[in-house]
Image (tube, rainbow, N blue to C red):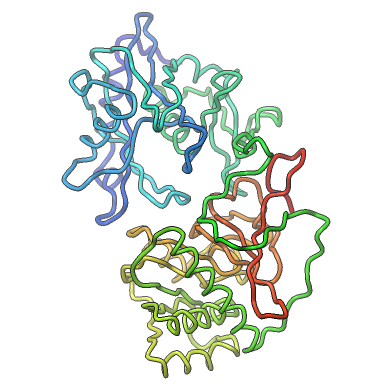
Length: 451
């Protein structure tokens, strides 16, 4: 391994100079978070990195290891935001820090924002204090621990890729976005820091499922979406038989659409979401249900706009009569033109179970366009991009609430997908009409979701 005793800072400076602006800039109008990667050299030539452990009762990323950071406020630079957040979260004196530069920004789908890491040297170290509202403890981790193979772990972030994770001690697992930045930092200091070992090369005993570590004391995984009041709850379990598939006709589309509309309205109220509702529809059955939901929402005086992201000339039989009805009601159905109107709520009825392979074409472009805003997302049947059997196979549109149509696709229960699915409901037929049933994780020895 390369000696970094004398040229550690030179190596980092050279690596930062090698990043072009295209790698550093975040999209204009995107939601941007800044994180401070604070480093200090220690007397034996090692390097120490400042991390935090988030409080276990936080709604977002509870208990996870992270860098100090938060949202970039209006009028701030990314660098200013990163230093400010470190001052707020761990009481780091801004005068003790020298900003070295920015690492490449990357998008975090579950949180729907761009993360911009800022690299800094801690010139005048001093005691740090955790802000009780967010931070459970401050961790000072040495580079030598991270390059020690005994700490290496692998986490499967999709069906096709493995990422680095580290067991810092018996309690603290470093993974996810923070792990991605950590691996980038180690590579800047030494391209061969792992000796040619990749995460997927680690044995089964080194493969971890962090989401199973983040369940509550009752064995239930935390759900991300706003809870809808007055809804019956049922556990998801293997003993629950799947109901027969309902007919895909106009009446069924209307009934399912009414349930989706009810969920969207209730979720918006629970989350305090305001503004227009944009319904994204494809050309299949899911799109027909979405359009029926748009008609139902418009009847309740909601401001509704519909964007078509399906294939021209290929449409579910229920779609065309609903399109005509929407037109009669003054609800325009316009094709996607590269941007999306500002929305408080988005109903995602693009793909559903019609996905074949990774998301691509117009639906993928729509997902990318939504990175420019932060609406409440209600998915119809499945979040667009989620494979009904395999789960995460590529990019997808994370949902705050998912309303499954009649039955639950196995892909909804793949490990680690809670942040992408949000609060999960089933649109069930009852003698009194469509109703929502909330699906909760099964309790038991497996600590979380199961099929």
